[in-house]
Amino acid sequence: MEYRRRQAIEATLHGERGTVYKAHDTKIRIALIYPNTYYVGMSNLGVHTIYGLLNAHDDVYCERVFFPDANMLPYYQRTKTPLCSLESQTALAEFDILAFSVSFENDYLNILHLLEFGRIPATTEERQDSYPVVMLGGAVTAINPEPLAVFIDVFIIGEGEEILADVLETYRHAAGKRSKRTLVERLAQIPGVYVPSLYDITYTSDGRLKHRIPRANAPAHIKTRPLLNLDCYPAYSRILTEQTEFGKMFLLQLNRGCGYACRFCHTGYAHSPLRHLSLEAALRLIRQGLQVRERIGLVGAAIADYPQLPELAEAICSQGGKLSVSSLRLSALAKRPDLLDILLQTDQKTITIAPEAGTERLRRLISKALTDTVLYDTLEHILRKHLVHLKLYFLIGLPTETDEDIEAIIHLCQQCRQLLRNAAKTHGKIGKMTVSVSPLVPKPFTPLQWHPMAPENVLKRKLHHIKRQVSRLGNLQMSHTPAKSAIWQGILARGDRRLGHILLRTAANGGNWKRAFRELNMRPEFYVHRPRDKEEQLPWSHLHVGLSHHRLHDEYQRMLAMGSQ
Image 1: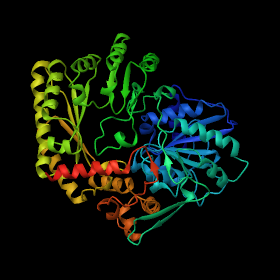
Image 2: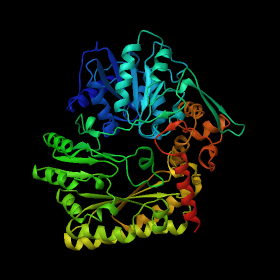
Image 3: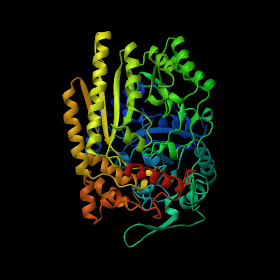
Image 4: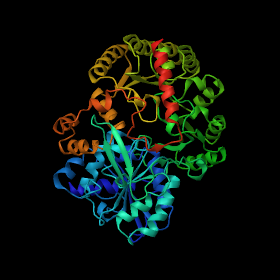
């Protein structure tokens, strides 16, 4: 098995283009750790961006670490072989900094397993000065780092490009000269850096957060630092490998943030304002990408709002390239039919649409301005000229949702399926259709952060009904997030640092979080199924993202008022 492990590592590195190798005696050695498999991690542009940013410093050598895949995981569990970096097979304990990049709550348990595989104590309290500094950043912890607070020395809150430069400068001056405690106290003075061990937390008798008291001159509030000029740190594929979901593409992020502020999504609230990569920078990177890949994948939450998207599409097409884009907002595309035609002429084979809800009433409630007429007319316009595959994304468990809203999801799928059938008469074959359904998980820094999540049994019933009805349509695939998994995600999304005990117990018992709650005499319902009131201090209240708490609550009240009409 050890021979197979080494063979797999060599094959992985051999299949890469753009990997950075440096001398082992480089002053600052950083392990960039993604708590999922290589396939998933290398599909994440954040990993590429931070890898390139760190290795741009002459005195920094950043190597990557991923969670073992299904074939290798039993080997690490059985043999206790220390987990090592990909590039040089260096043990985690030999690095100066372990830098985790985390995108999803469901990967939190993998963080604990990775530390265990690397023979690194899990909690900050257990790690002495001889161990690496453990840092963590990513979109999900930028809105609530507290469930991981007992494990992480330093959080990077928000977009980390500019913050990391300050972190490295502080590390250069302080590392090795003073204790780790002194180092993290200095790091805590950097705007956008959060050191949870410098805060004392107290709770009320009913379990709600009471006080968060900073020590050692730590700031009372952590202000995020959005990257205002994307040209300074463009996000694109730094390492090319076909062992990823987008292996045949060169990925390029066109924008960050979102200007639509859908009430369930934190992107439009916590990651605003909407910012675009300049046309000049985008064209330069597209030229670079077409030298190594035939297809350019444009990434962003608001691709259809990029002002010069037609110019980019034409540039790709004129250079013999092909284009793929992430989810398209039909309400924006409906106003620009020329843009639709240009995109489809560049070999865009799949159209991804996120109606989110089956009825216009529920879409209005969550600020998703998409009417059935716009959806069907735009899709019909596309299918009239092009054979495409269709992906639809829906949420269930939305506020005021009724059985009629669930039936409307099924009806919408039927109508879209019929449009694909009608188009088959013109094109000679029918496009594939994929439907994805996920339970709503209320997130911090959205108007729904005060709202209770739907009960697990209700979500199970709705998912089962949709799956049974949609499966009868034929030539259609449906995927869904299981209700139990969504509830666990919901617990972690709005949890406090007491969940560290739950995570430790869950990691030790094979992943049974319900058992962990029972053994620790804690109630999961406290985190997911109770409404919060406006005056409650939330676990993430110390984070300032440039958004008023009162504005969010006003939005929540407007939504509730709409739902009662």
